[in-house]
Image (tube, rainbow, N blue to C red; front, top):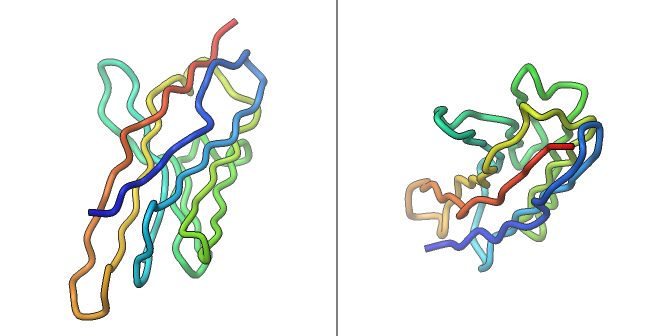
Length: 121
């Protein structure tokens, strides 16, 4: 039901930076966690980074020190600042959110449609 709107993907040279954004397109009661996953050609989708509504973060080891996830809870928005990008970061990046639309309903998950990140000279 909740639409996730992603932006910020594109083509960048090795060592460059990109900032991804993802926002829920409608009001919801509560968000438990938002994050970013990625899938490269021929590979499984993998976690990149997540952040809870309280600010706790989790990163893939190869992203630590280069990527920073942040959020704006009031706007139901999550960001991924990616610095020192490498060719192996090339993938489709998907936004994920786990949320509750009303207090009486269970938590549900939703995926964005993905945004392409290409790191190449």
